[in-house]
Length: 101
Image (tube, rainbow, N blue to C red; front, side, top):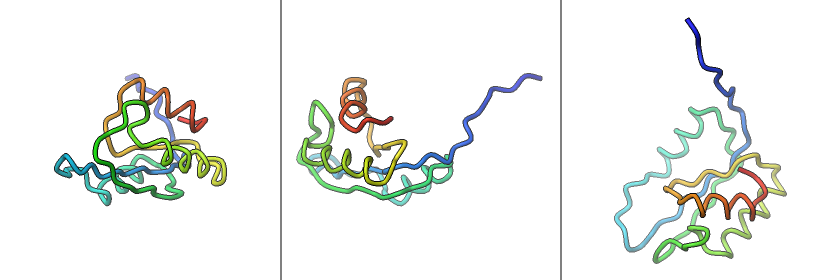
């Protein structure tokens, strides 16, 4: 029997949870944290905020992205996890801005 190679986890992560005022909140921050932990992430910090609607370029606003990028550098994060669905363009823009996955 052949098994797929699985990543061992242990990546240092920053979690991002933004509340959108125009949508009902189905996303639960505590559940998000538990999912990240069960996937093997080491949670360095949680960034929270609120917006009227998602930003087309980053999902979060540019100021929040600057804050996240600074935390990535200061804390040595390997990964930034959003508690929201991102478009491929938003993922690419965030990776470039934060210099990590």
